[in-house]
Image: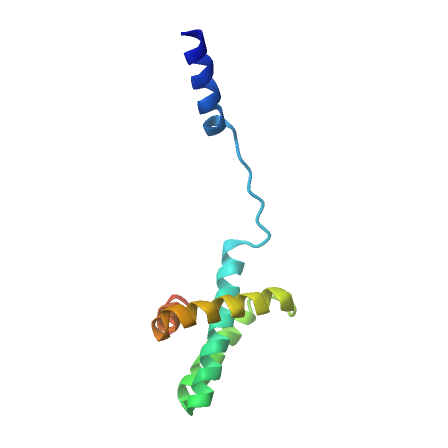
Length: 108
């Protein structure tokens, strides 16, 4: 019985310990960076397809998100990493990924 109690205590101990997670970015900054990069990808695609009206909408929305933060708030490495992540997901899921992401960023 004593062994059972000790085993149970050792098994349940990690559940009661307080764990701390350190995040470098706030959730809103993370979402803003994600939207800025996705909007950049989508606006470049629209410009290449000749859809200038859509391009202007995407660029203005991108500027709205970018103006929330001071210049050079996001490092170039972080920015490029997020673009690469989006490109990988676009290859996997296609245009649907872009459309869902743009809706989350506020494009109607």
